[in-house]
Image (cartoon, rainbow, N blue to C red; front, side):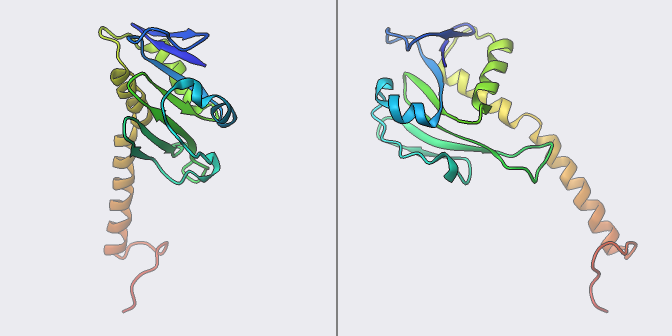
Length: 165
């Protein structure tokens, strides 16, 4: 799936032929293995989608490659949503067999309008979507940890192991 980065994301059948139009694309790992040369990124990305252990980026000569590992806020013990990406000045390609990148792009397609469209602005909004709500989640964790600490310090709970006396 290819999206041209215009005032909004425009679904397209093929990559742009002009040098000015930037794009975001989503391909499966199998499609990436078959068609990566068509993106003309000069990237040799040895991708094992099952071997993603975290969010990271690697700076190459004239590109950026990396992975996303996004925890599920509704079920922190569930498997993270994982996908890879390859990025150069022309566009970004998400290599994703889970559908997560496509889901995020569809939200952006339906909610974002850019006065000055650019790949940078798209990436900013993509990342913002991923971390939206993280601050509140961390604050709730902090409050819960503070509550647990208070109970332990006040010796008011039998739920937690207490230090030997």
